[in-house]
Image (tube, rainbow, N blue to C red; front, side, top):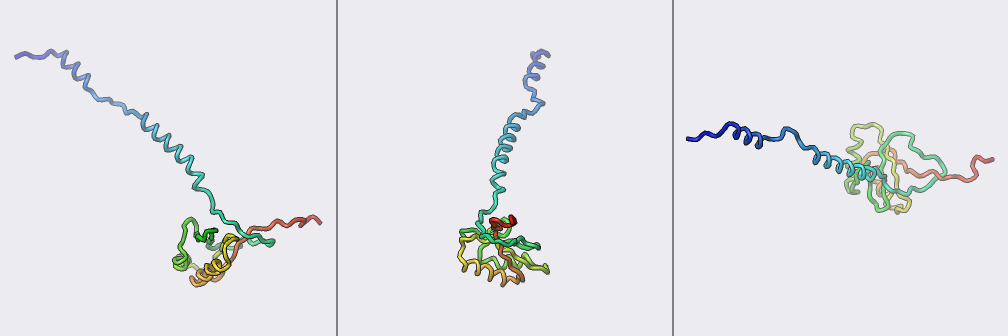
Length: 148
C-alpha cells in the first residue's frame, strides 16, 4: 500500500477552497440601472390631470374642505387619483362621506364638456346625499383693473 505525500494533499485542498468574499459588482450594476429607471419615471407619475377650466372674474377658490371631482374632456370622472365609472359614482361618494357631517363636493369640469353631462354628474352627486355642490373655474385676468 502506497501512501500519498503530505505536501500533495495540502496543495489539492488549497486549490479547491471556496472564496470568502462576495462579488458585489453585479449587485451595484443592477442598483444603478434601477436608480436610473426610477429617476426617469418619477417625473412622469407626478403630472396632473389636463382639464381646461372655464374662466370667471370673481374669485371662486374653495373656502372649505370638500371632495374634489375632476371631469376630463373625454368624460372620465376622477376622484383623487382614481377614475370612477359614472354608474358607480353615487355609491363611491356615499361611501366617501359615510359618517361625515359636512358633505361638500367641488366639480372641476372641462369647459368643452356638454352642459347635459355636467348636470348628470351633479344629479348623481345630489342623489348621494351631498348638500353643497360647487363649480370651480380659473380666475380671469381683468385688464385695467386697479389702474385708476
